[in-house]
Image (cartoon, each protein chain N blue to C red):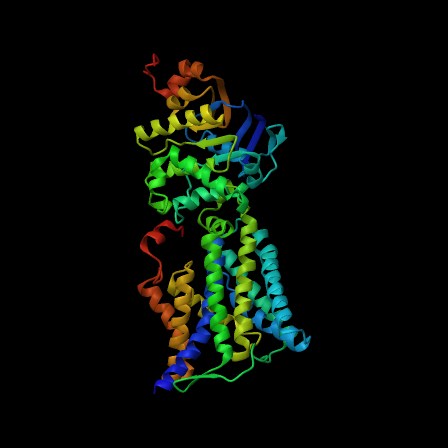
Length: 244
Length: 295
């Protein structure tokens, strides 16, 4: 579904992504793990068109998206839940979700959009309770749910999730990861998941990639990566209990 | 006594309407881009002078002239954004604001070149006897100004609160990155904000010219007053700009009437200073809203 081939990204003189190739199949959850500054967020921002790659090809559903603007990429079915959530804080929860449907919004589609919104509310009931509240007044976990809900409102086939667990309580993280699996299983959604919380990410993922200083250093089925000694040492803590 | 007071009140409401529209013009661009567009006053002047050009010089019918004026103002807003703001992309905000000053100087130059330094005027929208309330005289054009301002305010309120495009425009202001990620073409929204604010300014100019005349260099003063209105109400809040505009307009006309007309222009500046000293966020912006906005 998404194929990256030898992608390079430069920030001025900094070579942030170095010849990265990556493959995501339909209906898969792919985890991208790596330390701080490894380039995970940069890679996602490149896929969603916020940053231009300097080299290499990004192909989504057979179409080259490396020179497309973010709004056309959303229309093609890729939705990005950015790091730090970035909800529209002075707007209400409802308006945030509504703006999520911006790419297919029209007066004719209004009832469908309402249905989609109801579906989001049924996944995240807390959002329905807060629908009239300003998004900035929500807690961190609620804002994360809202960010995911907003991304789903665009009816994506492909979801880019950047650090959904950042700054959240472990129980909330668990809940959010459960939803991600549910989304894949019920809607056939494909997910590229970036996480520092490598263990939880690899547990729900089908395949995994390890990114270090802009390079993919390891890749393979998620269970293999979980058992890999290098991955354990670097990202899972040395004395990890891998009989999970 | 009452008659005089009412007379001042109505003239205050009239100029206040225009300040309100200028203030709203500031807000529209500020809300979409965080830029303070200091060429906002020129949009008002353009509205008045172009309306004169179409009705008096070309002798076109009133409605056609009004439509043409609005379209031309929109086009000028569009050109301003495409030629000066868009090419800069991610430039520093302060630089952008300075560019708008440059644009205002250029626009003033062009206006002076084409219209000269004389004030212009054309007949009011409707001919007829002025109204009299407790002896105070209200020209029909005054009602037009206030009515048109009211209509603009209502339409803009509906636009920003009830339409997806209006909400998308707000979203661009709040967080351009997130706006891009939900599929909003941010650059187009910025363009739209310049068009909209030029049109709002021009409408104010069209309405006020039969009462207060219009000349090429009225822009900066209008911009200052409108800016005071916007700051007073809290930058970004249209409701605030309207109330601020009316307060400044009324205080100005009271000062001119009861104290000295020479002090008129000082009023807005004194208010601006007081607001900035004591309540820099403006009077009508709530605390939570302020925390949620990026500055």
